[in-house]
Image (cartoon, rainbow, N blue to C red; front, side, top):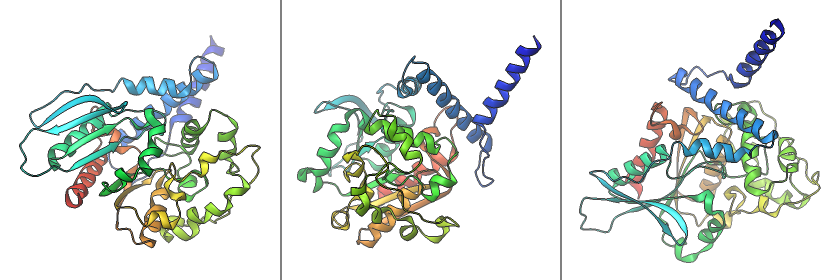
Length: 354
C-alpha cells in the first residue's frame, strides 16, 4: 500500500510539474489562463502517450478533442449561415440578412490549427465570422484550410485571385521554419498553450511523417546547404527591433547536418517570410497582430519589417499581454477577455480598410 501511495505521489508531482507554467504578472484573468494552459498541456500529454503506445496518432487525438467544440450552421436574426463546398473545398458561408444597395464587402477566413487540425466549425471561429459578417455587413467565407492543403499554392499563384485581393490580415501567424531558435522560441520555449516542441511537431506533421525532421529542428540543424541564401530573409538580428532581441546573440543555424532535404521547407508559398523582396512588394495592404507570450511572435514582427522595407502598407498590433490562440478561448466556457479584445481589433481594422 505504501509503495502504491509513493508511486501515485510521484506521478502527481511529475504531472503537475509538466503542466505548470508561470503566468507573467501583466496577464489578466490569471486563473483562466492557467486553466486553459493546464488543459492544453494535459491533452498534449495524453496524445503523446497514446501515440507512443500505438493506440492512435497525436494529431488524431487532438482532432477528436477539438471536434467536441464543433457547431452546426444555424442562422440568426442578422446572418444566414450555411455549410457548402466551393470546388470540393468545405466552407461555411455567412450572408448578412439586411438588404444592401451596393455590392457587399467579402472576407475569406482561414482558421488556425497548426497546419494539422481545427475547422471553421469550432465555436470561437464561428463566433468570429458571425461578428465579422454582422458588423461589416460583409459576406464571410470560412474555409477548412488544413483539409485542403493542395489548394493553397494554387490560390497564391492564380492571377485571377491575385487581382481581387484588397488586403490580408494575419493573426499571430507562423511564417517560417528554417530558423527554430528565434528569441521568441527561446523566451517561450515552455510557453503558455503552445510550446516550442509542440510547434515543431505540428510543423513537421504538415511536411512529413519522418521523425528525423522534428529531431533535427529541435537542434536547429534541419536545413540543407542550398538554403543558405534564405537566411537573410529571417535574420532576426537585423529584422527585429531592439526590444524583442534583448540579450540574445544571433548565430546562423548549422546547415547540411541532415541526411535528407525537403524542398517544401524552402517554398515561399507555404512560408511567406522566405519570399524575396520582388514578390513581397506586390502584396496588398496588410494587418498583422502578434502576441508577446507566443513562440511565433517574431515571425510576425519580422514580416512587418520586411513588408515595410519594400513599401507595403502595414498596420501592426502587438498585444503585450497576449498569448497564442487567444481567439480560440473567447467563447464558452472561458470567455477570455484578451481573445474578445483581439476580435474587436481585427474587425475594427477590417471595417476601416476593406
